[in-house]
Amino acid sequence: MKQVFNQFSLIWRELGLNQKISIVLAGAVVIGGLTSLLFWSNKPQMKLLYGGLAEKEAGEVLAVLEESGVKYEIGGGGRSIYVAADKVYKARMDLAAKGLPTNGGGVGFEIFDRTNFGISDFVQRTNYFRALQGELSRTISQVQGVRSARVLVVVPENRLLLRGDETRPTASVFVDTGTNALNPSCVNSIR
Image 1: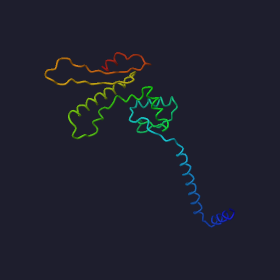
Image 2: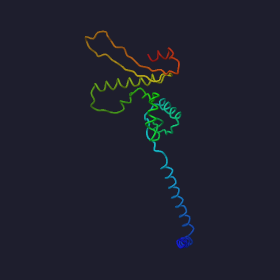
Image 3: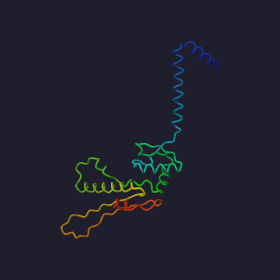
Image 4: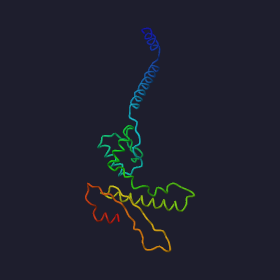
């Protein structure tokens, strides 16, 4: 061992100043790289909890995660939430028990962002009503005190011999139990 150390010190003395600096810097870079690799490998693997959330829903989910002490990361412009891979399923069950997320009322008019050539008129009309229902649900869900809303739009068929038994549109609105009842102006707005 002493002989190896003597050879190393002899080689080190024969090196110039620039070579010594280069070797020291290269060693520091290698040690720094190994240290950062060690820290990175010990970091928990994050997995998607929910993605594509509305701002209100994301805030509610984050409040519950903070309350329960679950560490999280935010991505996707604030619309995606990541938690440790081993805590994903438990966090989803805890959130589902509290009624979160509310799914934002379904799909809205973004359904038409995708171009679908050759779809039938029936599919196009169905997509329109789905989008209308989703947008109405989202809008009603934004009212203070409303936990979630579901809207179904029913349009009677155009028939010549149809009686006047028209079905009226309906909406299911779930109000938070911790707040007061909706005031009449909110009810009229929803109506």
